[in-house]
Each structure stands twice: as structure tokens, then as C-alpha cells.
Length: 247
Figure (tube, rainbow, N blue to C red):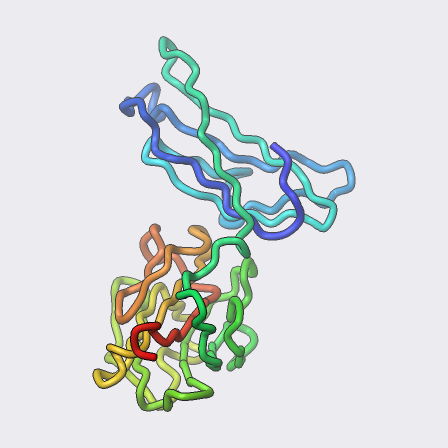
């Protein structure tokens, strides 16, 4: 199937047929691969091993990056020998099109996000898109959030998770939460507002991870994790929104 330039998410829904083992392979299954390009600039499957990515009957997603000229991916479905071929319900979405929801007429508040990124150190981003190195496979090792208007740094709290489910306490005041230079990637995070502001504002956020790609949005203190356990975080997207009813 053709893929336009940029970062995309290929989604394979769960199979409608019950899974069974055949010669050590659980079927039905789907294999996603990037065929060689005549120009040498093929589509990159993020998190691929041994030439591609297997998706089992439970379904899953693949994040891929296509060059400026676009490219192709090969998606092959495998069924049990006596079973009929199963149509593949494939969805392909540009990552930038998967937006964090906001209320109509409520532009997000300007917010600074500070990430400690492996081999780069502390990097500051102003919200309005992804903070971090989307698709780079560079680990985020610490995080801080600092509002730039209306809300003070002491009125927003955040915590992070690392491998094995380790969890930090909530911190605030723009302090970095996590580690520096220890090679310990974040695998999740959560953000909430101080109690006096929770009826006036929402904080909505999501992370992008090495193998899983962008995760579904979380909000108001919910933990944001990748579907795959201990999948390292590489970017975050955060929105602070004033509720319409509070105006």
C-alpha cells in the first residue's frame, strides 16, 4: 500500500476470527514490512525487528516514517491453512492528524515543556505540537511542565513512571521529574492541576513511544502509558484548556 511523506500510524484492528496455533505461529496474523526502494530511501518502520513487525489476532499499530517522496509498505495477512482469506481492515493516519481534543473556542494556554533527552540534555519546547524527537528513538529521561500564562508553575503537578512500574511522587514549580544521565527512560507520565483549578481547567496529554507510537490521550491526572510494557517515551503533547462553563 502507498504511504505519503511524513510520520504515519498504521492500525490493524483485532481479528474477527478466533486465534489458533499452527506450527508454532498464532494465526490469524499480519506481517508489516517495508520493501526495498530503488532510490535507497525506503519507509522506516519504527520499532521493527528482523525486517518487519508482526501483529497478532488482538490487533495493533505500527508507526512508520516515509521519505519526502513517499513510499510503500507491504502488509501480508496469514490465516490457518483450511481457513478462507480474511480481508484486512487497515487504517492509515498521519500522526499530525491525530490531535489532542480541545473544546470549541478554547485555545490552549501557552505552556513550556522541558524534557531531558538522551545525548541532548535538557531541551525546552513551547506547546503547540509534539515536544521531543518524534520517531527518533531518543529516550526522554525527565520531564517538567511550566505554564506561561494564567496558571502559575505551582498550580500544575506531574509525575513520571519508569521501567518496572517505578513511580515518582507528584512534583510542581517547574522542577524536573525523572533522572539525568543514568540511562533510565520514562515509560509513562501523568499531569494534574492543583485542587482550586480543577473545576476551571482541563489538562489533556499523550505520549509517543518507541515501538507503540502515539498513545491515546489521557487527562487530569490519568496515567499515560504505551500499550507495550516498558516501551520508552520519546515525545509528549500537552494542552491546558479553560472550560467553557467557567467563563
